[in-house]
View 1: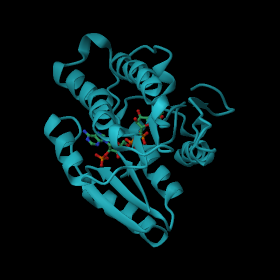
View 2: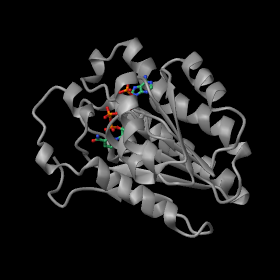
View 3: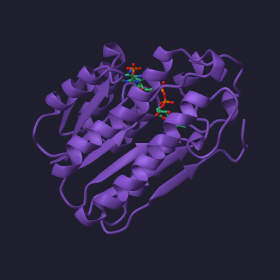
Length: 230
Ligand SMILES: NC(=O)c1ccc[n+]([C@@H]2O[C@H](COP(=O)([O-])OP(=O)(O)OC[C@H]3O[C@@H](n4cnc5c(N)ncnc54)[C@H](OP(=O)(O)O)[C@@H]3O)[C@@H](O)[C@H]2O)c1
């Protein structure tokens, strides 16, 4: 049986990845904070999975990350998907220290600590998928905290990829453009949802990358809508 840990699986892209990767030989370790939403996801995948575990932890704080690690336990992972993320969108002069630290905690420190803890025990042929963004490569007005965090995760991931190459562990970075999820509901402005890709589109490319032979890796996958940028 394979063990897959997906952070931020309670909704959006994480949920779509969980639904896509569910399988009879897979134990899905699904993380989120929203208990009700996570129960819904577990119900949606449990018939198609060997086993499903719900993990409720706040990744903005070190104790939440430690408790998640403790609950996952000692059995090695075959896949770690660092997907949980937050977007604080406002002029950089208005970003509070709490918002900055939360962004660093969820978008950078949690993936770092999870990779550092789990990677040494992952078997050859296993994979780490980091969900970055087009904002890992370009700056946008009012997206400074978010872009900072995704640029940082990009640098971290590139280095980890090189360190894990000899261990035969793939590190796949995914760069979605605007994707139609709840993340946009918390961001001021009118966003053209019809021009966005779907979370299922992102999940599809993740599944494709993972389906490649173990000695082949997609290092970076950009995915966007033919409708163009917002
Ligand atoms: N949507 C886009 O346009 C887009 C584009 C490019 C990249 N991305 C990236 O894709 C990833 C998923 O985003 P999404 O669009 O699917 O967003 P979403 O629908 O808002 O889902 C975010 C997920 O992250 C979890 N999360 C947020 N803060 C957390 C915290 N403090 N502790 C633990 N979990 C936390 C949420 O858990 P709860 O809801 O249970 O709290 C939820 O499961 C993020 O890394 C995002 O940056 C999104």
